[in-house]
Length: 543
Image (cartoon, rainbow, N blue to C red):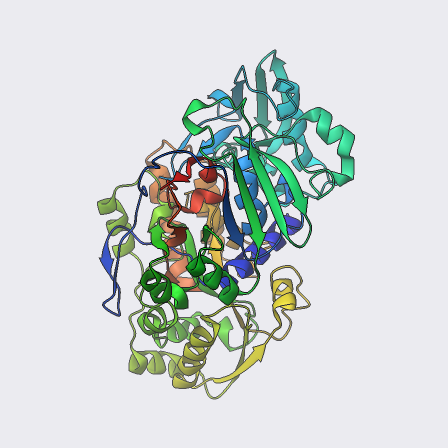
């Protein structure tokens, strides 16, 4: 569990560095008055391509799916490897390498393995490959970042020539959803055995079933994929013969490469470059659905923030609309809860509205916030706020939080942490010592509120402040044990969310859409956070 959650923190830092994430729900006017609109589909391609280039802010440290919990490896692997199920751009889940799935008992999931699928070396997909791939998450020697998704797994067995059965120790409404993302990724058992600990590195690569296969990996420079002509799904056969990922860590370098046409596209567009890119005439900027929240994590409940009234007051004194306007060019929305609306997959907008109306509200009201803080005994106590120069909006956010702390009578101290050390705040308790608040942009890997709320239960690795609430633990445990199709599950999650929003283990700031830049040569991508798991590059063709 700890490894996976550490990776989640690093992934959050990585998105911070790119300064865009979050969610929005349809066309809307931002607090600054700037309009933006979510795009489900970019224009259809006019034809195929020989090649296109794509930028990433960092090089993957590995392409091993067991450690794929970060933006660089995931956006590559999404096009090369596949899972039993598929997470689609509209955030629905459908069959993929499993042609069907069944839940004959509350603790049993049965997967029928699709026939006619081959790995990139030409060998056929079998049930044995599925068993070997899934069991890696249970192997302590592997140290999978996703082992928490398997916490309730008792056994994984081949129960027929094309059938795999997963038996759980207790009902778990999250498990089957995770089969659509990295925990459900399937690799050749033969390849896993042959490569061992070297699996997924730049010398061995991977051998999966996706529309692209790994062609070359030049460390420090690029990863090139080539179309796999024997791919099983004709709807997602790659439109381009090749895609080349280049590693450009500096945001200005990425933006200039897009604006000049040297690089055709990229996810996670820096907010301070929106206007520049839109005016460049070199391509188009699109926004899509997201499942991400920008939050301040309360990492010390032994200090003044241990009183929930102080946490409430700090949130009320924070000009969150001003942060969105100044730090994100107005493209975003003030958060009403700790999860994005898009996490409520399958729940109607009116039902989500009703759920949110039942939540405690924290409008920007400095006078009321100060009064609440005084009631809690705030009288100049120090709070330490960690920040980092790794991302463009950090100064805006940190300054706003510090101003809010001052306004309610606290004494803020800002500590700047270097980008290479900031990730340790998410993985090492010692690194968080003496820090009261630190910033994260936290995405969920499935569209379910429990993907976030599960991490702040008592004892969870990512419960960085050690928050504990018996009522919340009971409700969240009940929600996880309740089947997805049981209407009672939504009610239970809503009640758990009410507890979390009253207690504020993290301070929710705002949400943002997924952003993507497409140069004038290319089109076809569906803008969505699912670019981390869906073969988005296969849909890109000539404009």
